Length: 182
Image 1 (cartoon, rainbow, N blue to C red):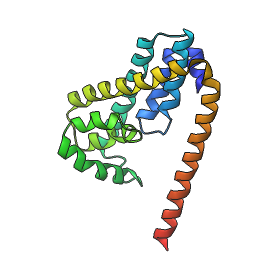
Image 2 (cartoon, rainbow, N blue to C red):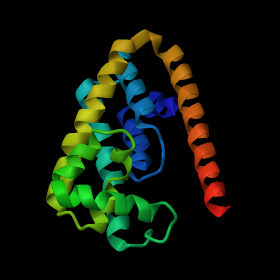
Image 3 (cartoon, helix red, strand yellow):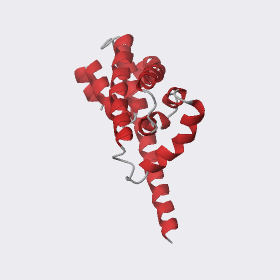
């Protein structure tokens, strides 16, 4: 992952942010922290890193929005639950629910599906996605800039923490599925 940024700079950041925003669990936090390191090293500027991350997030979010609007994924296990779970917050907060979700881990990745399914107006969707994604990107990139030279140890630790968290989530989901069957 970090090699893509090292090799392609802002284009690498853009390309790594697309799948995360399109509901593929690629941790944007790692991408953005390393982007901050790249800014610290002078490989790209801070505004370019934020712009690339925001543009990638917008493109992936539009793809997920279109999938949500098409209803093509509603039969996929888990997706229907995500859409149902977000109906009430979208109805209560309206288009602003997209902005709030963009500022929360995990919710930021999946809010595009229910926003598309609920037919959130596209202009506010794009506007709130850009604002929320830019704030998220700026925050993590600035942390990466501050971490600077300590990146290698952070990358290793963060990678391990995310791997353990992913394995625990998978084990919990498997355990719950088995309990439901019995």
